[in-house]
Amino acid sequence: MKKLFSNQKTPILQSKITKNHTTQTSNFSPHTSNLFFSLLLSAFCFLPSALFGQVTIGKNAEPQPYSVLELYGQYETGSYGGLRLPQLTTPQRDALVLDAEAPGLMIFNSTTECMEMWNGAKWISFCDDVGGESGTAYVEINGIKWAKSNVNMPGHFAAHPYDAGRFYQWNRRMGWSSTDPMINSSGGITWNYALDASTTWEQENDPCPEGWRVPTYAELNTLVSATHEWGTLNGVYGYFIGDVEPKLFLPAAGRRYSIDGSLSYVGTTGSYWSSTSDSSEADLLYFFADLSFGTDGSGRPNGFSVRCVAKF
Image: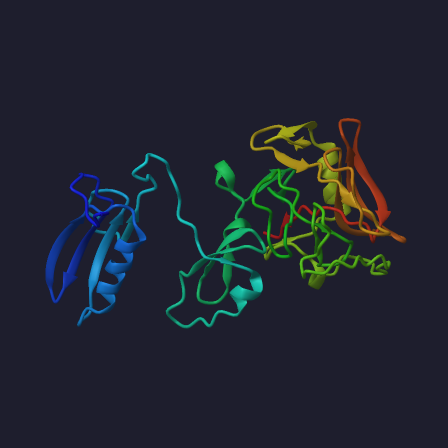
């Protein structure tokens, strides 16, 4: 018969419980069974009065005075694990009914693939501050502050400098997947090959996060005049730009073709839009492996990457 409690000294849950102003410290040494935790939860639910406590899970140690809950990632078997936040899509997140007690609520947004926190007024994405080891969200080159990562979902940066992010057609806020199957940021799959006739990338269509914008043609040319070198970051090909660390990295994300949105040149080319138009085309930064690196014009329905510059 399986015992609920063991005499082995392998406690995984310790709590300091305060009820009706009386403090108790309890050590539990259970086998890792769902039955134990179900009984424990049931006991808490049927207590006749309020229960206040601090809990440590995963280690035989009292919680620190400043902690309500402490988690240790090592199992009894010696393997490790982490805390998995609730996985919500953007529509599921937006359907939450939040009140004045909600600030600090955290989720993992499976649509944007980012952790998010509600600050009482809006959701803050942890991916928006792509600070990295330097502690800043940008790389400054020739006086211009460049975001460290491409735009991913509209209004959000990709998590890492080597991530492709999403592709954007010129003067459109709709982001398209950088891998197949092709799908846009609203869940659609129909490619729009119509030509946008605007003279500049309009602010309401700018996919950059708040405080950032699509660069101008002149700003992209400052990258061409800077030191640039073909290489790899975390196994991804692209260009390192700048003379000192941290350098800017532009991944060779490829593109989506203007006519049908087909994906091509991943790992060999990078195409980065400017906000500047050129007759029926729009200006961009373009590179092909280690053979060419410069600016040019291209058809506006093409799906290219966006690397933002700071407004501050």
